[in-house]
Amino acid sequence: MMVFGLEGTAWNLSAALVNENEVLFERNATYIPTKGGIHPREASQHHAEQMGKIVGSVMAYVRERDLRIDGFAFSQGPGLGPCLRTVATAARTLSLRFRVPLIGVNHCVAHIEVGKWQTGAEDPAIIYVSGANSQILALRKRRYRIFGETLDISIGNAIDKFARTMGLPHPGGPKVEELARSAKNYIPLPYTVKGMDLSFSGLSTAATEASKKYDLADVCYSFQETAFAMLVEVTERALAHAEKNEVMLVGGVGANKRLGEMLNIMCQERGAKFFLPPEKFMGDNGSMIAHTGLIMLNSGAITPLPQSYIRPGYRTDEVEIIWA
Ligand code: AMP
Ligand code: MG
Image (cartoon, rainbow, N blue to C red; front, side, top):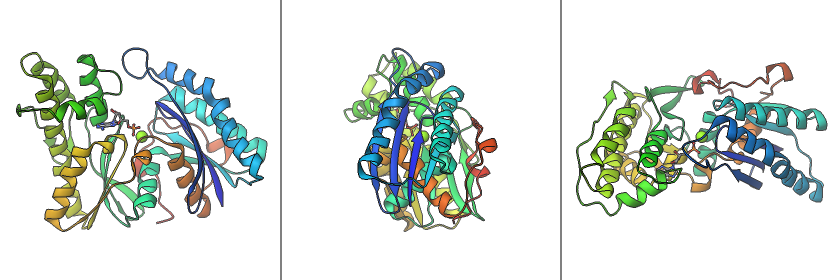
């Protein structure tokens, strides 16, 4: 079985080809905002302009080797409306042109499934942290149940926003991590966990305020320590409640070494095993869509054309995990 996957919910347009065992090919085109954060219309225009080149390179790979594609998977949501529309249009066209099934994939489920595939985690408590989402989940009765999530903005967005006001280029995550390494002092910032849910918006604002008085490296460090401690607290509780003995970190913010280190310490203290996928599978990528499309196709979950409409608010727990 071989599936083509197309991702483009936000900043990265990515097409990939996977089979049961490996990623055969992947090509990416990254949208970098000229100023400010991700602009939905500009991002979708970027994707539309790059679509021919990105999809074309995968199809050239297929043609040269005389391969057969069994399904066209695409990220159906959640994501930015204009971006999703561009991706869905391309995927429908390919599916019709080659008379091969279309598979609408939930982007968050794809982050989780590719993580399991790459790490070998079997049934972990999952911490999914990205530019748009922050959720703590675990599989129960065939759904990735959301045990806790952000009540306002995602952790990635909070870091990027703060970084932007500091004049750092987008995306700010890696730069904030780097600055934090040279910090000398911890500055108390708002720690907001409400039950199992989290809030990052106030933290971002408080960090911006603190930067007027304190050294930037110290503020970056304190931002990370505070936000990550909140995330680890909720993950630890989810691990206990859901009675799992594995933890897996996925999503773009998962590239942060300090977050991985803190989760690893928590897991050691609890006798749980910690799983971290390779970095190229952390941020948005086409391989995760292709891989999830493949397991969906194997279990008969294809998307008829009338059901292929985009789903900007598609929730992780709306998907029945029939392959579990
Ligand atoms: P995604 O939406 O999953 O593609 O993830 C993108 C997000 O990951 C952006 O908000 C980035 O700032 C964030 N990110 C990437 N690398 C790091 C890092 N090393 N530390 C913190 N955040 C990061
Ligand atoms: Mg993502």
